[in-house]
Length: 124
Image (cartoon, rainbow, N blue to C red; front, top):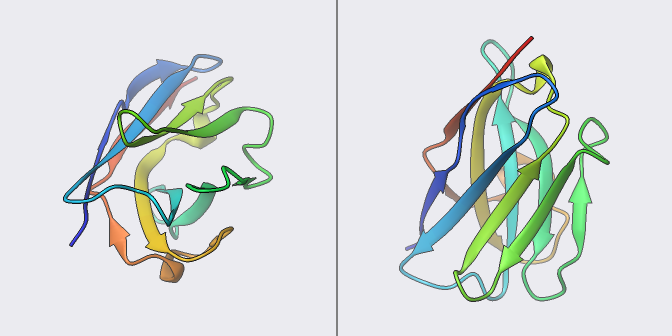
């Protein structure tokens, strides 16, 4: 069983940056596809980015391309999401997810393991 824990959320002004991190307990990420999703109040959970641990191939939602970067850290066994040029519409709870199998895995149902989420609030 894999447990995921997100960190790094918070309050930031529009145009600012935040870095989210996702750590796993119980096993390594080797062989997994890792994804970041977000859910704003009253909206469905939506795909943000994903990365294949082995190949490092990355995929992004159009709404975050050029602003967000997903990456992995072999030593720390974490998956990070660097978020730059943040906008008020990026405000949401951000979730880390993991699943065996190939990327891009852009649907929530593609993932078996989820973190508890971390709040990101972008003030205008």
